[in-house]
Length: 423
Image (cartoon, rainbow, N blue to C red; front, side):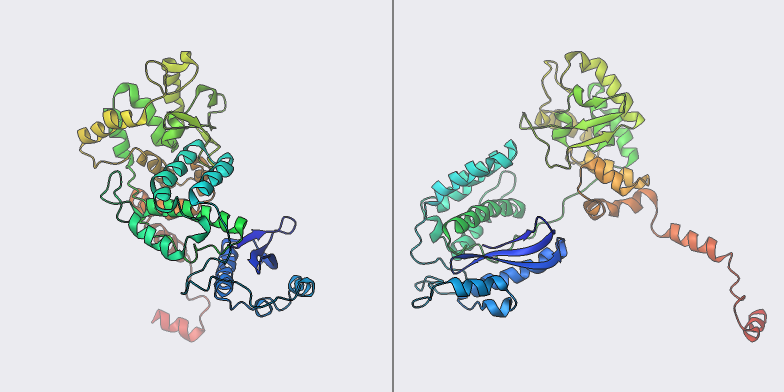
């Protein structure tokens, strides 16, 4: 399977794919952007489709390719037809090349995990291991990785849609996509290493419904903080007004609380009771304390500061068990107030919408949230802002009314037209 890569020196994009057993690189003048990557991805799909069907004309795609002309002069003449696909298999999907000996899927999957574990968080390592053992090995484990066909992959995906999930009757589209992403990664690496055509071709992810974002209003937040148990009031105050993720606030240590600069340094997270790295590079950030948060953390320091480790912990000084807190504190609190049941993660969504409603700079909000850009901010949260600020076009209407009231609309009209206006 080919890829779209960026040149180290120029930053321009280029195509990297295999043709007739050789690695091909074709360079472009396109800058690295999502639009240009999408454009090249469509081109790469057409190229690989034609290669798989034995219809690829290098000169037609790249008429000015110096690299291709150099390969043509250096390559020995081909004796007979090039074995681009297995003639025993027919159809529109990609086929496996002849005489390719590959390891069992189970063996290669284990090797693939070991090689990639160094770049994964521990929590993601567990996720991958779970997907491989529960879903992939029972279906493909004893099959050669190079013999898996596109048809088998589609049948496997259909079977996932019928498999039971943890909370729902069947696996969700999001979970199915996660399983398929692991399968795709394994097959792409195997095809590149053993030089066979990857069967994971033109298999698009399932559509996933938008996240259920249900932020609380400021009045609801005040009611929640007034009604919650006193020993958890500061915990939820920090959650509501900083936008920290559950793992970030549960994994917060006093050494990362800087009272002098009023900053919360997000450097670690707590996942399944284990300390881990932050979710992304951008998640490694400094969150500013508002006065409310500053005072809440000062009160909390009087409780757990002498333990010198976790900010929010149990009586034994150990980190909070978020499942226990959710079941024994959070949901009973919502029921007591008559609120619709919502996940604790809605505290993060609440912080974002309140910041937007207050008119804070979107770039500043994105940094506080640990987002790479403001795109997600507006995509997910902006629809809640008019409900919180009543800025639904009326502000622009007032601006125009005020500005246009000062304009003499007759000053540039001809004399006859001015007279008509007075008539």
